[in-house]
Length: 156
Image (cartoon, rainbow, N blue to C red; front, side, top):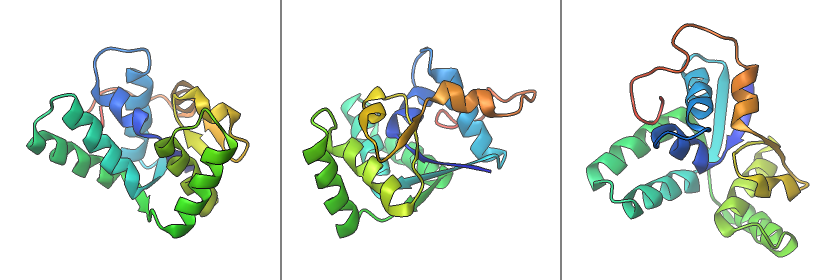
């Protein structure tokens, strides 16, 4: 099983409109369901996901339902004082890194999983993590009939 710390954009691309990252992100999420991939995230990821959905005009009920599915697909880790301290250090050291992305990277450092699954190239400059593009991650999964289909908007 492959383990990644996941960025919120993987879930947003999977649920969103047609985009080059939509199918790769859906395929990775199918890998979670199939037991090939384990996603890890700070609890902050779920908050960020809901924030973006509400900002985009999704109903509160739909945002909560989808966030519940995101939560189910990730092993969540605490956004605690250690992660906050690491995140602030990353923000200080990497000028292009935003606060939320710093929390994701700090979570990766804190839990010892440097593989950051993200379409966001800002992580390429962060020495503490190894960004894995969703297209690459999807390409590493075995092909199976229906790997790009699924039930929920989030899981593909």
